Amino acid sequence: MGFIVGLVIGLVVGIIIIIGFVKAENYRSKLRSELANTVAAFARMTVEDSRKLLPAEFYPSWVVFSERQKLSLPIFSSSVMYLL
Image 1 (cartoon, one colour):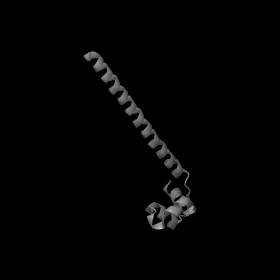
Image 2 (cartoon, rainbow, N blue to C red):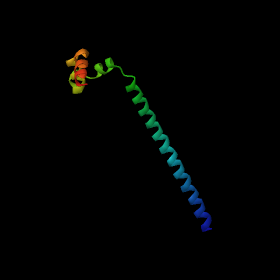
Image 3 (cartoon, one colour):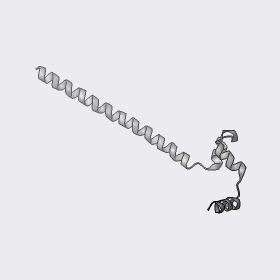
Image 4 (cartoon, rainbow, N blue to C red):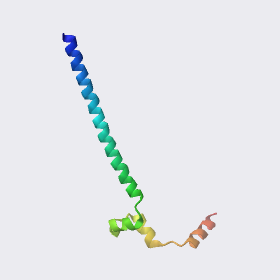
């Protein structure tokens, strides 16, 4: 009799563990899908969209530098030719 009770308890616990793993995997899959959608939305974002979202003072220094300097290509290419 003890063997049958142990067998039944083991089966119930095993099925509960399997159901728990399936639910956890489904929840994890849902989170990964939402994250992928968010990353895809950022990939489709244009410069105008980012300017609407972020004011100028929050741009990184390298972005602000490139906007303010406006380096001309002929000067840059002649300095490269000088180095060669």
